[in-house]
Image (cartoon, rainbow over all chains, first blue to last red; front, side, top):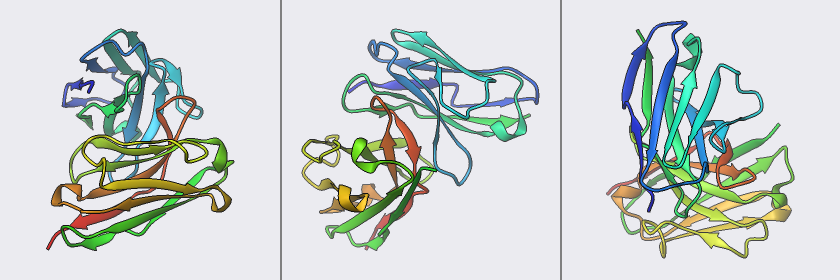
Length: 107
Length: 118
């Protein structure tokens, strides 16, 4: 199975700040990577797929990048509604696997 | 608007069975692969099962293979998860999810809680 390692596990940032979350795959996943946002008490929502494609309706302050085994999610100009846990997921190889999550809080 | 509504969760004893259902609306159900994903309390996400558009192909991780069965009824726009020989580690919120063009999950239900305990 492909192991997905996210970092950091948690972070605290200020409104308006830029935030980066990393996701490292245990082998090349050829950009078959998605990012999800899960707000407290809610179900996950798709933000990014194919490493850098923005899902319809997702604000443009969210962006994804990376290739091979290293990927990142960037949030520009952090808003209060971005407080959530973020997960990455690989779908290059079955079984589909998720990272452990990054909990984002406001400073 | 895409809607996925799960039902059938609850408290069940170890070794017993439970069947979850998911009612889909707002899209052509028969055109999409569908899946179940679970999340143990305060934990991360774990993919549980996927089914092809016709139901002829199913996929499971080793953790549930042989115990869980995913199925669908395209005429009723419904997805199911039959869970047998339940264990305490199956305790989680179970989400019904739609696969996108590839095997990511583009829409999720609100989730249903399953507690396995004596």
